[in-house]
Length: 314
Image 1 (spheres, rainbow, N blue to C red):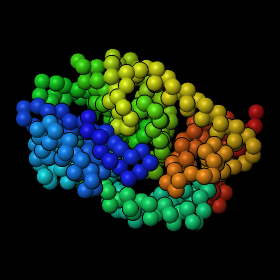
Image 2 (cartoon, rainbow, N blue to C red; image 1 turned 135 degrees about the vertical axis):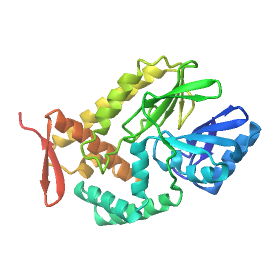
Image 3 (tube, rainbow, N blue to C red; image 1 turned 30 degrees about the vertical axis):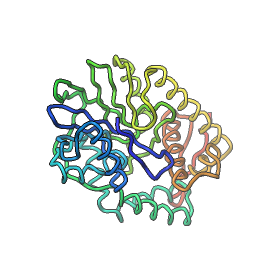
């Protein structure tokens, strides 16, 4: 495990290096910043390797703290990059920053953000883009496929929710799960809509994938944030309970009257959030509203490109 710095609230991301046959296979990369590159170089030096020894890079998902440096490392080492086609397609789309920001702006306008917050959104995402390099995909990973690294092998496990194409990597012989952002020891991953696949239900897919994973004989989870842990099944149940409670709070807010997603998010998370966390709060609120609509408990009303939610009459 190599812990790399991030200039965000979480402060760090863990990536994993597997040494074999004089080479190094990486699982995730960290952000594309000089500080990250220096920290990774230092980490590999401690085990007698360098950036040039990297032969493959397996990526859990498309977020910058997991794949931002993949292109730079490929240029240095010639390493092959492997991830889901679904998430790589989003990365290709996001190369057009103006189009991506326009899509984000359209979503947040519909869900109640004002002009000041929308202007800030654009500046935040443009600053993020500087820490996320683009890169070609050398091989698309398929859930259920098995890959060998030296004398070890691991299975690719679909883990949608935090992103539509997130993957986990399970070393069955060792009982080790490289969990990315899917299962974290102290926090729950943010769930966000896929702006280009409005039929995608992040919460439903997230919870169903957790249920499927509970059957795996996992003895240790190595997450992207926080320390490794062993209470795998118990942690999954805690996460499920968290979302049951969060869905209940969402429904309680809607029962107060016709409300925007932003208004519901304030009821749940409060007003005093850091700038970027305001957008994450809207995302989380929206995915719970989607499930309440699917369950027949909440109605959505669209008026002049604004979405409002209310309790469905009984």
